[in-house]
Image (cartoon, rainbow, N blue to C red; front, side):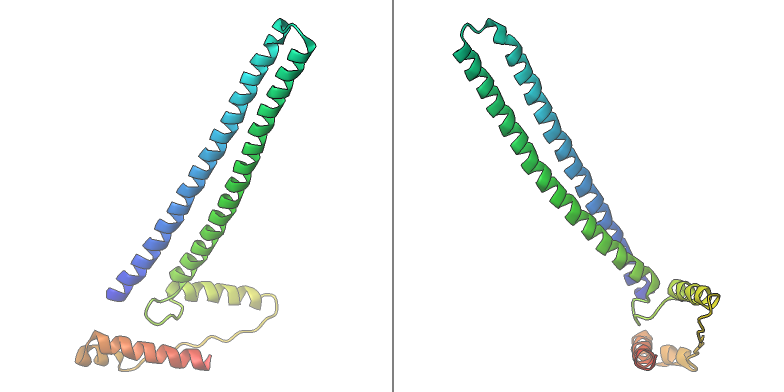
Length: 177
């Protein structure tokens, strides 16, 4: 029960981390929307000020107002471009983190936490993959192993000894296969 609990905790942690990454992506998108709203508001204000140019009395004054508005809009656009780059980098980094965490979750879901060998889900996955390849002409071998007397180790020596025996056995299997 301890090993299953540890494996469940590991999967729960991975799910929590993926959820955290999704929340970070939502926050990043909120930042992008706010930056877009900011530039839109800046453009609207500039447009209002430019409409009032009909009240300007000289060409030089008109030219100065237009240059000022262009400079203001340019600053807004540059600011938005910087925020957009930051958002893009954050977004890409979070997606990469999510991919890594999902890969870890897939491995954890298919692997026994104690032995690091495939668990039942992993065996089914690998068996179905092998069968699919066999239909294409690839051959494969299937070996079933039984640990005779394993229950006696657990009963006589305790679960810690049983775990140690499973770990030692799994190492031998990994070395051979």
